[in-house]
Image (cartoon, rainbow, N blue to C red):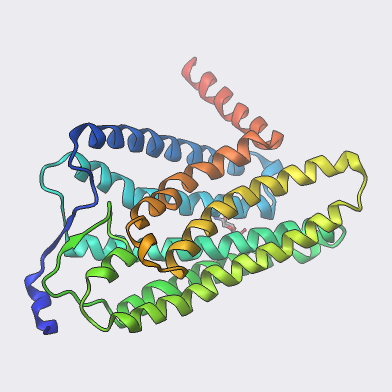
Length: 311
Ligand SMILES: *[C@@H]1O[C@H](CO)[C@@H](O)[C@H](O)[C@H]1NC(C)=O
């Protein structure tokens, strides 16, 4: 197949959606509700951190970065899925598709690295509480954040652009959106080479952070077991909420990108929904429901809205 054929391909057909109108409608409503809650929850969390001086700590700034990532991530895929699922013509232009795939890959990689940084932050806070403010100082946090965002970009968009996927005649994507693995399946270049590259990048972006997080939490938990039982519950609950997000994210992405088997291949679009749609809404939920300081900040925001409405 000649790569010059790619000029014929102007759009992709998204054939992942069901043919059944009822299923499509339920999908639309569920996705709409989750998307609105994601936008509300994450915006509220970002607002709370900036408004409440008590939340001006590294942990909450990292959490804020995570919320920004989640807002962007759901906004590049959910509105497009909402538009396509109810329309008769289930197509997406080549340009939108490439933009969606690259930004999704970039935000996903950045999230993988950021979650590891957040585990490191908890590790220092719990295992070296006396040195915490010295180690996680303002400059350090900004450097770490810059490295995370640049690292996400360099490992995703840079290779995708320097050696782009080639498409010939096949344009049917068995997915809800433009996602790298689905596109890889219908591309016609040297697929094995792309798969190898993706695997190597995933070692650094997914497996290494995951191992790092597991080790951090083993150290954290062994340290918690040594402290007084009254402080234990609080430390455990902070860790538990972080671990929930972490296992959802890495569980699904590592399964998708590193365990590529035939049986999984038809499931990929559903697994992608878990980390693309469910995890962005979990972050604000888990952190706000389990955290009194965030709750107080939320109440403060609501009160000021209430007062504004009455003046
Ligand atoms: C991201 O984290 C950095 C460093 O902690 C912080 O300065 C910045 O305000 C955060 N950005 C957002 C949007 O939360």
